[in-house]
Length: 222
Image (cartoon, rainbow, N blue to C red; front, side, top):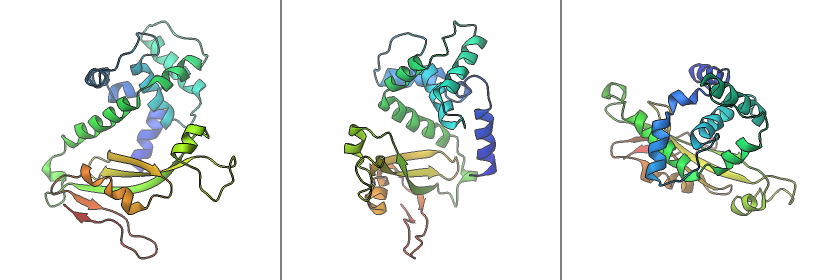
């Protein structure tokens, strides 16, 4: 992690209230909700408050629901709005209600917004360089998750967690992720990379790492 990224991460985690309100304005979220025709009830933990809180929770060193609810209370108190109790159940239920398609829409629109601000002086030989990489993520041990993303076969049933392999394309200029795909753990890296090719544009340069065994990673241009 670069020093600049760490500084920004620390700034957000140490902030009172919900700092993502400034980075992801309500107007942007409202537009996405409208385009996706998502209906929601007007309540204290609406999609806006819940999403800002969820993003803060992900970045915070203290990822407990109690901590994020305290940030919500600070945010609402500053806005002179009736604050909820410190009980976390309402927030957890609201977070579970966030539609996955809304998160995907905001992921895409945020990356596009940053890309639109890139000028030619930041391009490499007039080309936009994209970086491809992969990783794995674990998730709660539920029947649904185990069915979709089985744990490693080397682990005995009940002794492991579902694990998925993810592939991501980043913009070298903005640092933002512009594409993401998820598959089962034993998916080959090349297969995962091919799923991301459709997100590349003409004249993009795709950069990937070299394998430890000497095999070449995905590198090239369109």
